[in-house]
Image 1 (cartoon, rainbow, N blue to C red):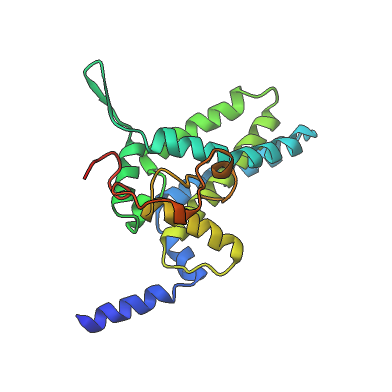
Image 2: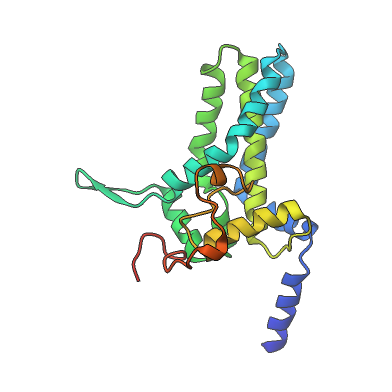
Length: 223
């Protein structure tokens, strides 16, 4: 038993990006988001009709994405169950995220729940067709959002895997999100960047100045 545990720890310490990618593609959510990206790219190329706005929109979305992450994390993932008209309002996303905080190393809980994607992907596809003045621009939106989704899923998975940061840029992102899980859940809400929305919105303090939260692993409970 001891030998097996030691070997397992060595494998964890030696996890490569290739190993991480092999594990990543074993889960349904990356395939679903990646599939949306592939279909969106094919549709966008087929439609054509390129305008300057097709170059501007991705830049704007990229700039706003950290703020979208922040809002989703704070308002949806950290939603505290509430009673409304006798019913408990508590989404699957919020429930799964609480489970994720309980055990940040449980890999399936790292990903966007596939059950959520089964309705979210059609909704996003519908928005891309109906909510834009041109179909081409709507598909540009869908391509960009899908690509950001893949980046989000990969980054979040990698942070919670045993892959050790090599670059300074990724190490900063890795450290920030680990602080959120293991230091204090009230700070460091962005996942794919650091020093962006959190800094502007006041949730990126000096970690040394922040006390360790007793509820970082059990959101909304008091010990």
